[in-house]
Amino acid sequence: MPHITLVLPHLLPLPEFAPDLIRALQAPALASLLTRTSAHQRSAAADTARALPHEQWLARTLGLAQDGRPAFAAAAMRGFGLDPAGGTWFIVNPAHIQIARSHSMMADLRHLGLSEDESRALYEAARPLCEDVGHALLYGDAQTWFLRADDWTGIDTATPDAVAGMDLSDFVPRGKEALPLRRLQNEMQMLWHTHPVNAAREGRRLPVVNSFWLWGAAADAPRLPGQLSSIGVPGWIRGLSSRALGSLDELDGALAQDGTLVVGYLAEAAIAADWGTWVQQVQQLEEQLFAPLHAALVQGRIRKLRLVLSSREALAEFTTTAMAQRTFWRRPTLERLT
Image 1 (spheres, rainbow, N blue to C red):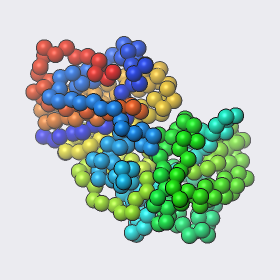
Image 2 (image 1 turned 180 degrees about the horizontal axis):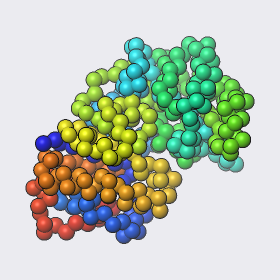
Image 3 (image 1 turned 90 degrees about the horizontal axis):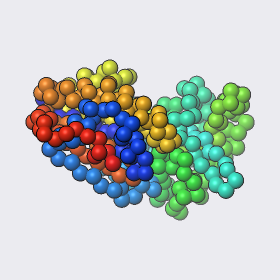
Image 4 (image 1 turned 120 degrees about the horizontal axis):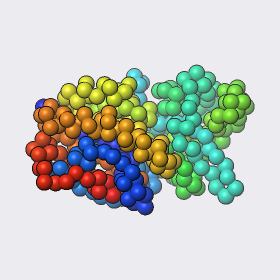
């Protein structure tokens, strides 16, 4: 019987909203999984300025942290069939930067809705510019490219989800190599400003791609431990995954052996503080994920289930077994989400 770890970013609501959100949820299977446990712990994230708690957890668990920072680029490249070739690579995400009166802000990358054709066209325009200044640029998917910059290893960067919706002045890349990065960003902005892709997107009232975000530097790609499956996640997590699910209807296959499943459905609503949509999505997960997991656990098809839940500020882990689920005197409740 397999041991399963389920990672659910943003299932922990922020404290100021938690009581109302929990009252709005009808999730008995999730309540049982959280209440009838053999172990649980919760901790405040040490530093969410550069990476969110679940991103830090993935970096630690997969052995992809360097100098305390998530170093996902080289391993994600391998997932896209690309060879890091011993260099230092960064993840590059095409982005939309919003300029306000007092600050600038990067929109959640999920809002771009960038198609493969659009991304390929922007990539092909950007690649010669990068190569002219000595940096190879490789294509992963519409939202995930990779830049080689062996001499930029000291740049202090943040993950896109840590930055989305925040004042960008707090996340300006730091380090002695940051100047050539900013120069490349400025040149890319000018290149894309008049690009036909952006002209067409403006005509459809879609956000233009007017910059890129660089992060996740890694110089090597160690063999990743265990089986990692994912669904509803950014491209870099799909790149780390040995299996990407098309829908939760494929859940049985992901539960057939020991492994970790990352479910990213809640991120967009939580980052936008769209709590009505968040409640609806948790209800869908109750039906399509938590109830089947609870049934599999009670029926003995899963030996042990570990839930790794996060918010922007905290991380919580819950471990349960079929034996723990038999502790009928523990009334199921969602209070542990607070």
